[in-house]
Structures are given as C-alpha cells and as structure tokens.
Length: 216
Image (cartoon, rainbow, N blue to C red; front, side, top):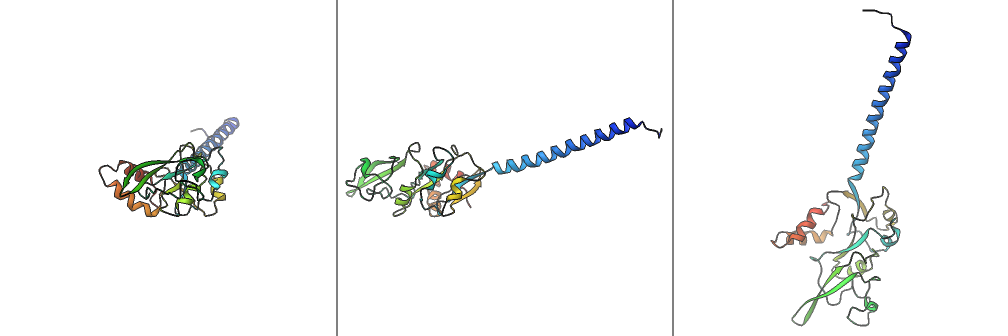
C-alpha cells in the first residue's frame, strides 16, 4: 500500500472530516434542544382551585387581550341555591336577573330555574365562557357557600408562555405546570363527588372530566 499522500488530498480529507464532525455535533445538539422543547411543550399552565383566592389578576395580567382564564362550574358541588352568593351582588335589590342585582360585571353567570320542592326553588348556574373575563368575583362569592365555581386556564385559548404573566403576579401561588394529557384540575373536595357521579350510567360528563384532570 503506498505511504506517500498528496498534501492537498490530506488537507481536503481533514477539512471534510471536520465538516462532517461539525454537522454531526450540530445535529446532535439540535436533537437535544428539540427534545427539550418537545418536553416543555407537553406541559401546560393551570390553576390549583384549592389555592386560588379570586384576586382578579387573571382578568388583567394575561398577555392575551381576552384572558385565557375562565370560570367553570362543578355541578356536583353546587347547591342550586335560590340566593347564590356567586350570582347575586351582596347589595342586590331583588332576587331576579336584572344586571344591577348580579355580581358578575359581564353577566356571564347564567341563572336558570330547575324545579321547586317543598316550597323551595332550585336554580342551575352555568357560565357563558365568551362573556366571562376571568375576574373571579363569582368564585370569591361562591366560596362563601359551596365553592362550586372556580377558575381554570382554557387550553383552546392559552398560548402556553414559557413564563406565565398571571403566574408571576398570582398572590397565592396557585399556578402550576401540569401534563398536556391531563391539563385541568378540580378542587380536592370535589374529586370524590365527581368520581361517584362518573360511576353512574348517566355520568358521561363526569367521566370525561376525570379523564382530563391532573391527579396530583
């Protein structure tokens, strides 16, 4: 085998080797970064309703013009009260749906008569998500009774910032990262109620909720 090698060929060989090694290193580094980014993208911001105090920051601190935080209702906890402290302003004039009697500034809490039993009237309270601004007033009011209303980050709206502006300003440290596969949370005291409802043949909605709830 010949031992004499043309210097130009040797230089070309070395340059090509360095170039290939550099590309391989870049590809490996890029794969590592892509993996890190992929892992990060699999986590989402969510509110722990057991820590939330309805401070109002969610309505004003979100980077979006319309906050990604909305109120939701846990019907398993709701008392279907006639006088709901999450619906009525503490200074209401009458027990009816006029805007001046409502606690919600946008009328996002919808009150609907369900039935009357033994002289007591029961109402269902639903949330109009398009009208809700995430101010937490109804949540704070409802906490005086059953506490069935609570705030959640809606993932069809949230842009999943690396550092959530609301989380930074949250005074109760209620924001946390949860897996994409289970991006929602419910109150600890609601879990056994929802599980009980999910065990019933008609508990389809409860079963769907549980499939989306972060268990930690």
